[in-house]
Image 1 (cartoon, rainbow, N blue to C red):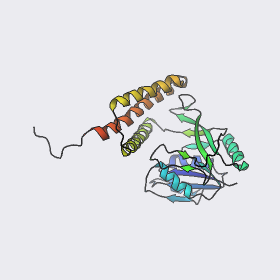
Image 2 (cartoon, one colour; image 1 turned 60 degrees about the vertical axis):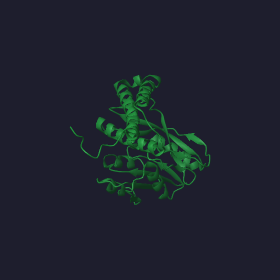
Image 3 (cartoon, rainbow, N blue to C red; image 1 turned 90 degrees about the vertical axis):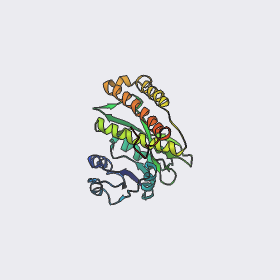
Image 4 (cartoon, one colour; image 1 turned 90 degrees about the horizontal axis):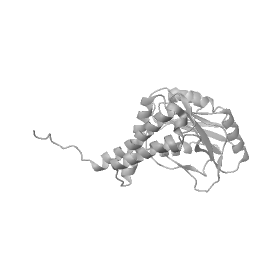
Length: 259
């Protein structure tokens, strides 16, 4: 059975080559770019001729659907540019595809963040459903935090071997990425008629910190664990604050107020 590695990318020149080097063994590589202004597409074309650009951004889910439609192979392995397939995971994937038994397979993801691999904090094993038979499963159309749908009720199986995830370059990258996700999350909620409150943001933010640092043993990740718990609490508060600003505050007046 044939296997395609599928990536949706934008401005990933710093990561893409290292990622694709770990995917040379697949039968097909599909790269869908969202309008990069760096060398992303040129790097992708070093590995495959199936490179397309679609900068009509409608969210991560829709972009993954577009990429899925470009695949000709029997199986799809969805990978992000900041991820790397380890040799152990490669063997596990090849064995699963060789059986030709329709199933959705989850991969254990091990993330590198702020100078170390994070093995606690609820981050590991961060199992993600990424290997599935084409046409029998596929992504939803969510703007962000898209999910793999399983309309055929396929069994879900766990693969062995880590998918390495080099998630954030530095603190600025974390904050920029967090702000982007907060915006997309708030937009989704507004579209569904939801409203937010600062109190909800405080409660959820505190809950996020306690869950990550205490319940999920983030303290075992040392200073990185503490920093991640604090940043995650901030990100959680920020998305509720964004929703509150969008739904509970008034637009600026048309005229300058009199003194």
